[in-house]
Length: 136
Image (cartoon, rainbow, N blue to C red; front, side):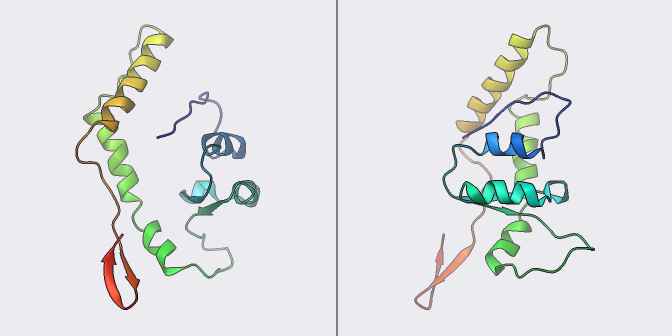
């Protein structure tokens, strides 16, 4: 599990913030909504070995996207479910902290509590291998 904190006046789609958040990921995919569409961000993550996947806008050229990536883009609700779990079950949604230390302790405790949950949301999709259908 990885996380990072940024100040409130910096967008979380800023290429520097995203690169710092993903700095310990060697390879894989990064999913974002339309706010993350940026050639600079795509290039920076691609240099790290990551593939940025976002929906395309209406005025963008249509690019070929693998069926697997299209399927995973439709599963963004899983991310929203995790955020909902963090807010409601792990009690991350508390706005009246008396100190900065207390706020960070609350956030770290919520992330630790989430990591110990027995049932976490997950994406399972079938993979065809040698003509057989298998769960990934």
